[in-house]
Image (cartoon, rainbow, N blue to C red; front, top):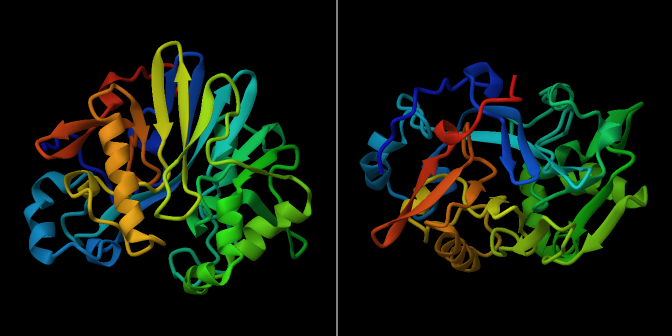
Length: 320
């Protein structure tokens, strides 16, 4: 696996600043990344329990500087959502960390990322959104479901239907999900429950079909109801892959689940299936946390896999 990409600043905050394409066309559908934050933030040994210092050092040559900061050795992680335009509808996939949220993790605590302003730069007002899809209920995928107004959490997208899976709702409302909420801060209460109470939620199946181009794909393990959002149009295919993997290290080592996985064994199974399914198919893959430009292709690499960015092959029109 080689790295021929230009260096990435660890303080990078917006893909447009470095000239990366944020918009991709898949047949009649467009996908636009809206980055909340992106910088070197996670120790790989914290994220990946099966990793060792020796293996991390062995892979630094191709991981740095795009995926891992060579000085701090921290993984460069993007927090971002995806705006999908399909069949005349605006679909928002994942809503990042959010502003003014009371969180245990310091780099999430009461931050003001200004992500709604970036969404507006992408031409989308909150009132324009028709559907909000959360690939799963982790803190960094649900935050902008709500915003703070007069001390109360209210839905950010008042005209949208929030499409959530019953598996996620039931799990995080059970005792099994409680340790995850305690670890991060109870994001269910400030980012999920308010939209349920507002009557904006449709609980849908993990194989839900939204329209002629968009359907869900169940990839359980990281969480019970984790889904990818697959787009098929005019013979082209893409998938917004949620947290089936967090770093390209998991392409080289598919059995490495994260410490945040609810079921590490099932997560391995889903990841292996995902990589086998989409390798060497030309499918444009958007793993939620891969740094800019995020979208790329999975390729078979011996017994495992590699990840190749698609940026050089994407048109830059309509990006500025």
